[in-house]
Length: 253
Image (cartoon, rainbow, N blue to C red; front, side):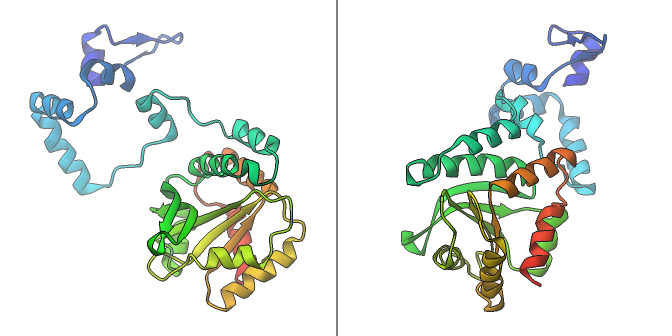
């Protein structure tokens, strides 16, 4: 449809400062709509497209939408990681800001971990609602660190627990997250808190949990999140997650 409008030099065509001409998805959606009925109507007028689509799907899977494409389709601003990080650093510790902390963590992780992890569900109820998980992601990784995890460990879902604490995270918090694991849901999670004062001690606790076959927990604090953000920006969104691999190697050592 873009090509059609470019060839016709229609009113949807925009001319950039460089002289390049383009037609945006947003303009097409505004003209034709984006619901199922609109798709059917346009496909009927262009029956060859459906044949080409089927042929393309048969030969290679389509790539996930990028954050830029999501923003264009949804007509929203692309998430700005450094701005979210600044909001996180300015957030006070304690129960009063616990919900806001969880919201910020979900926004940050949903940018960094996509498309490996997607479909975040907040306050995920399990065991008939008797237990909750702060954030649950579906592991859809087709490559990189989380794909490697899925090949070696049960992790169809990845669980995240958020602790807006101004104190040291101890055994109860580790046990709480490990209690959410199961062979069917998955046995890998991330425990995020504001500041880990004694990382070696906390990693020993998580290592003990792994050795006891109660699951695998990667602890992160604000400083670790900042490293993840910088790694994501510098790697142009690659999903290798070298920093997480390093932390994982400590966990299973």
